[in-house]
Amino acid sequence: MSEIDLRPLQVADVPAVLALQAQCYEARFLESAHAFEAKLQAAKDHGTCWLASSEGGQPLAYLISLPASTDSLPALDAGSAEVPAQPQLLYLHDVAVAPAGRSLGLASKLIERVEQRAAALGLRQLGLVAVQGSAPFWMRKGFSPLSQLPQALALKLASFGPNACFMQRALA
Image 1: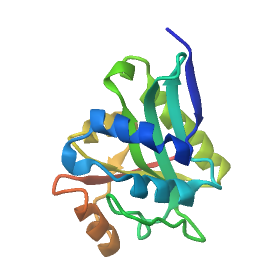
Image 2 (image 1 turned 120 degrees about the vertical axis):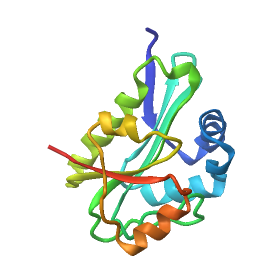
Image 3 (image 1 turned 135 degrees about the horizontal axis):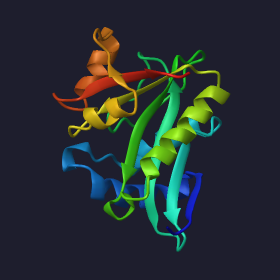
């Protein structure tokens, strides 16, 4: 297996992120450059976003996460994002792995990095919105659907479509 470069995601990487998301998501889930920039800006002091590239520099995967609470999650394609003063969880807003990188274990590497970062930030929960039928993948990673959604979370979840599922996982 060739060497993978896993490094912090920067605003300058947004064009690569846009190209990767286009390879991974249905058109209704594509977010704008402005939405990605807002999330990266909100997360910049927390070290919670990464880009995985091949040895030759080809972007293969990314993960964008930010400290949040269930009532502060950014909606899909939101033009703004804020980290609350007392976050409850590390929210995995977006994880995408290009077809060329799917046999390299990149999702697992990125999730491991998120777990380490959440622990370093003192957060004991991970949360995410599963789309495109990905809930079984996330369940294999230890996530469970939330049975009762607070109203603010239910409203944000609606922006991801009718089959979106909010899931959480406690950290050891």
